[in-house]
Length: 465
Image (tube, rainbow, N blue to C red):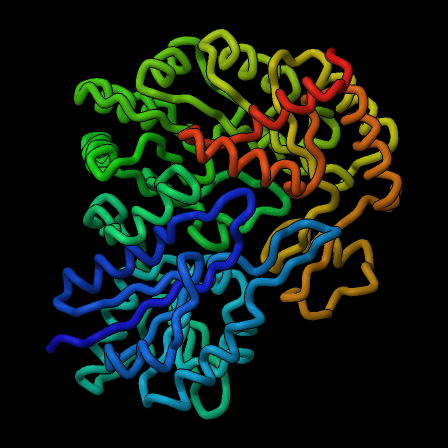
């Protein structure tokens, strides 16, 4: 039996650029393989009239994906789940369809969001196998209470099943990308995205990746990844971003993919998140030959004592060596830094800035405060430190800030760093950044644009190092 399933991505986060809903594309593909018909609506592209869509498509089930809870910026604090309950209410007024929630944002707050939204079901974590099982059970009116990762109501209580099963990413089909969405994202962000693995075995104190994906790595075969690179190039993409939380969790995995790309003689450029440790000259050279154009290092601090407090497994020496490897291969790179977290003091801020002066041609993207999520070591630390808001609803953004500093004090230091160095970009994108982005996209520039913005700051008169 085949069902008609309306899938809605309600992600509204579009800074610094909109991101193709890859997770929902995997869900749609899994449902297609099981014989179901789907329609995908993306609120980045437009916010369609739900009443008309429901009347036209007449779905049997509606799935809603929530990618982001908020913008994780301590000053702006933009919320992305406020429309969820209203959307669910409208669907329930117009149809008798069961509503299923999912997505990375939902997986962090499954109980809270199911209660808030009034939806019927949710799936936390990977959803491909579980959603197919749930749709089958709803069709056949059979038992669903044992489905892995399922969140549902039972006699007025919300039940959250453990995630017992592991989706084998290597066995998943290449995600389908509808033509109209491909055209939209290539026009508005210049790039498409690709996933080569899931899971995270690192222990960063604030990170939700282990909560969402688990700690066990699931890696795709290099040939399958290269085939998807080729398929996306054929769709017109000139730049791809590898969305793995850390692409180089295994040097062998990276090398295998790069060799497969070179074997196909692909010309597409790409970028990724890298861990600044265990990189070798040989691996960096191989990545550059295979089209690596930009690196985004999840560095967090340039001070060793703060890195240790954050749960990082590397030091500034590792950061410096990896940066030099990228520079030698003429690969643009930036470092994401988070200031004001555990162990941060006025002295550690000074150390980070002084160490930043040793880096050549780096861009430094800096934010203040660490968004606290349940299930993370930082949440437990916050509890032990007796924060006044422990026990409050964490759906509303709460931030950890070192007791040794104030928010205004940290921002003052960072803006002084930015005054002294064009490499430093502080906080969320400015109107100037957005204007520059529009001009560069219109000229056909692809990929991230932080390196161009840093150059603009330098031309504007910020002293050079």
